[in-house]
Structures are given as C-alpha cells and as structure tokens.
Image (cartoon, rainbow, N blue to C red; front, side, top):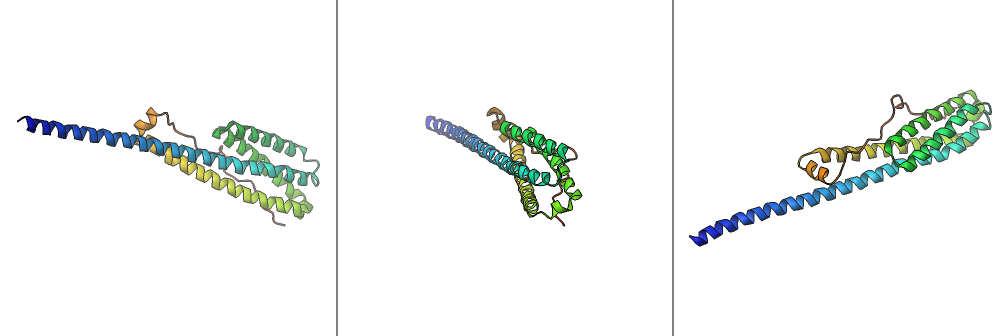
Length: 197
C-alpha cells in the first residue's frame, strides 16, 4: 500500500515539475522573442532615420541649385531650412512621433520648393537639378520602404504583446505598445518629384 501511494505521489510530483518546466521555458522563450522584436523595431526606426537624414542632406544642394535661378523665393528657402533643422532635432530625440511630424513638415516645405521649379524652365533643364531630383525620388522610395518595414514589425510586436498568455509575460517584463510611424492628416500626398522637361 505504501509503495502504491508513493508511486502516485511521485507521478503527481513529476507532472507538477513537468508543467513548471514547460511554463519556465515558455516564459524564457517568449521574453527572448519580445527582446528580438524590440531590437528589430529599433533597427527599423534607425533605418527610417537614416533615410530621412539622407533626404535632409540632399536638400541643401537642391536649395542651392534653385537659389541660383529663383533668388526671390526666400520664404520657401527659410521654411525648408527650419523644417530640416526640426527634423534633425527630432531624429536626435529618437521619438518616432516627433520624427513623423517633423518629416511631414519637411515634406510640405519641400513640395513648395518643387512648385517653384515650374516657374523657371531653365531650372528644369539644369543637369545638376535633374540629378538631385533623381536622387530625391530614390530617397523618397527608400523612406517609404523603411516606414513600411518599421510599421510591419511594430504591428507584429504590438499584436504579440497583447495576445494571451504572452501578454502576461509582456506586462510583467515592461514590454509596452510601440507607436507606428504615421503621418499627419493631409501629409499622405508625397512631394512631387516630376523632372519632366
């Protein structure tokens, strides 16, 4: 009778230990998964920032080229300089919402600059201007891809930290929802980079 009771106790103990080990391994695996996803988000944000910085670095050359033809468009040049400066500051802050807002402001200022070129046919024929516009168009594509990739990993991460039972591990380890890279209302209209003659 004693050995039968001992076997039952041993079996129950083995099941409890087995369940505890499964829970521990699941917790460790899930936490490591959150850490990996969080690093993917950080990398995605860095990729967006690099693409935005590349565009910001192209703009002074573009402005200088336009200034040679359109000297009386000083208001547009000032708006671009201010927006570019604000974007640089927001990139340094690392706050994705500030970066998004500053990006929208720079896009709006840049679109005003691109409208200026329509008034100056000789500017559109300038080879340097055309090359800069090609680079800008390529950079805009890089920004769009980087934003899409960033938002995709954020979507996966945000969904995972809210699903049960992973949500328990996320909450107990301080993994919080991450903001998407969004645009302000009306900013979904990309700057025109038409270089047609």
